[in-house]
Length: 66
Length: 445
Image (cartoon, chains in turn brown, red):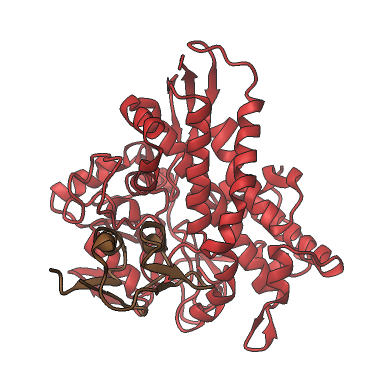
């Protein structure tokens, strides 16, 4: 599983950081930062889906869902 | 408090918030005066049909808003209209609310509170507006917003948790001796309304004793929208008050948000007092009745749903999802826009300067966007709610609001695991929806 964050769409709702802090951090302006490089490990896939499905701006997408 | 208007001689920044000569009728291009729109509420009376005569100040609107939205949706009316306030449109589906929120070319944020007073083109000059950045349009908006973001970013807000908790416990202590089954407390007046005003006042470095003034101001600005301009003099009082606070901070700088705003730079320049004062007004309005409403509505829900109270107590982990569901189902904030130029919006002939209401709470209950949209599901897993808006104007204080809402609920149900409604709930009037009086009877654990 790959996860993608569109920084242009992010408006800093902070839902991903609250739900999946293992995958997302926030910068000093409250903008989301993807901290994972590469494949989402199996144990974090539910959290990745949760983060994507709670972003009000549809800024997070999951690709190569296996 | 009297209804006299402050003298024009008051110094900046208060004069900009003072009275303006209003013109009656159409607002010509390039005018810098506020227009008293040709609308007299007495000519209209109570709303009979929200599809064609929408009024967010109708006393029956907020108590029944979810039913109003449902009726509009089911009758095939995705955009309500009204001749009130000089002309107003109200899209209610998630798609259309989203479309307006994203379309900053056709919809300006120059004024965001549809009321009987409407600014001329230059009265609140785009793109800055009177209370930046909520009143600002691109490209200025991003510039004005950027310095305000760091103080409200998640990691700056998290450390406030202990103080919020102490405040909530203090308010609960102040309720005095409680006899379960008998004691009635007002969860809005004795509790919810005191929390956000205290926190934002402390962040700004304003005296705690002035909380009542801030609440009066918010009431005047947000709830008395169909009354004559100039009678809401909480606005004048606050402009003067903020001017004095800015002066005090100039003489005695300290580690708070007011001093921060006075020192922060935009393109190498400090903000003008007008800009600082406008942003403070924004923080007070946006940071007081909104979260107070969310806390009140959540407790109103819990008073009637014992299973949800029990779940929160037995399974504290569910709070992460519960908070978002409270925000979705009981979103307090409807925003406003003005039509920037004549525009056909999904078949609606919108005219320049028409008002547009942006009911995020209605979008949050759109069944096309949310499964079982009118049902409160405490552990709803997929919840892209729009309680904090959509697009570039996402609520700046959302992280603080969430913290206050969570701690306020945690502390209330920890102290009072069981409670029920005890009499009539009085709901707010206007764009911010929430209980203003919420009597609840405390029951045995």
